[in-house]
Image 1 (cartoon, rainbow, N blue to C red):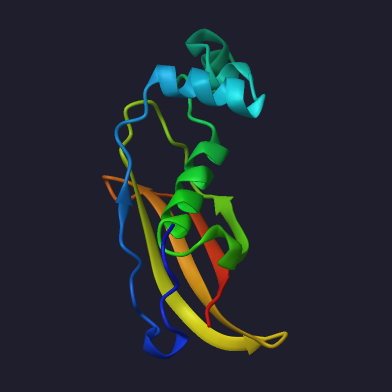
Image 2 (spheres, helix red, strand yellow):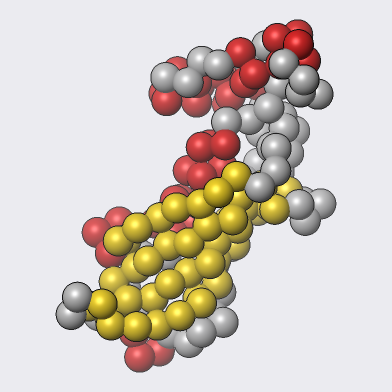
Length: 140
């Protein structure tokens, strides 16, 4: 389990240690569909995805969101995470390598806790941001 950094030593602009995931493949999409219960054809069947106007199968947006959760949870214990959210900004496709980035955006005190706000992005190796989000973390 990661240990908590000190609130006093964290500065706005600090970057979390990065996380780059291997290329997404069809096996991972099938396993994620089973784990999440999201068996929508756009994630599993090229022909049905194309019939829906997509270029082919696309990855589950929440799979990339899970990668952002992994990024944050590798930096601080899960018990320190107060919220984690994001919005889908672009499609992730099989074969994409996703890099997850976190940057400290703000420090504050909220409900008696020292908290930091972290801007999060999941992006393809071409630099296209697929998810843009935030995490709020309690730091002693």
